[in-house]
Length: 74
Image 1 (cartoon, rainbow, N blue to C red):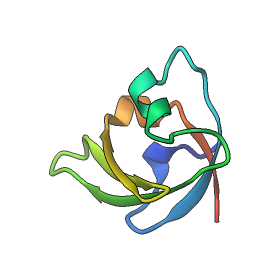
Image 2 (image 1 turned 180 degrees about the vertical axis):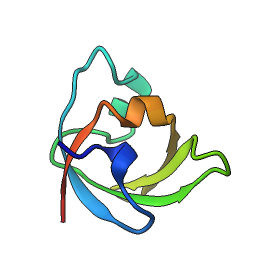
Image 3 (image 1 turned 45 degrees about the vertical axis):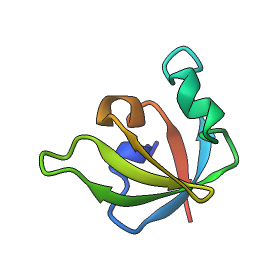
Image 4 (image 1 turned 60 degrees about the horizontal axis):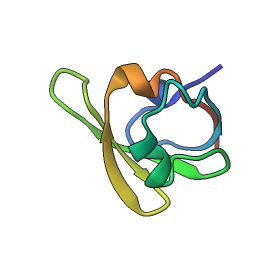
């Protein structure tokens, strides 16, 4: 199953599911919820963190966390 960590720059997807214990509460509060659209904006020089856009909000998340959020590509 693809995850946010497997997105290529510019790709968009819909968040499918994840374990709440794995995703920090702050990400949930900023819209990282199932059903929301996510796009990879940019990656840092060593591929960590990932800069993503979720419903118009730009966030930086660790690749380790992104690997736990399953998506469906658009």
